[in-house]
Length: 69
Image (cartoon, rainbow, N blue to C red; front, side, top):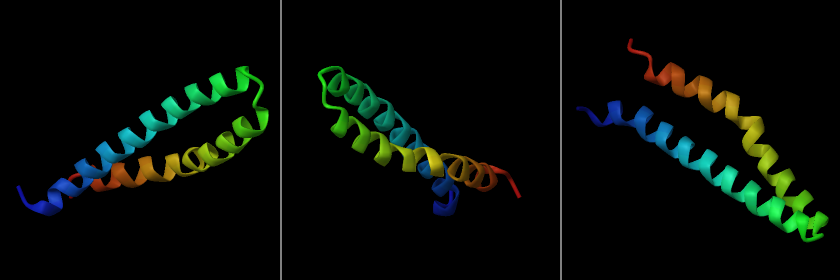
């Protein structure tokens, strides 16, 4: 298998990891917020918002890369 064929699969796995980390960080954020630290929670939510904003583009790009020519 050529290395270029591995790139879409690698990016897909990296994206999966990113989404898993996002979910784990959100769980920790909920815990921190439940203990009264709303400022920290808001800061984390703002940073995680970037992941959400980019998610659709990443999914569409991966779909195009994984489509056979």
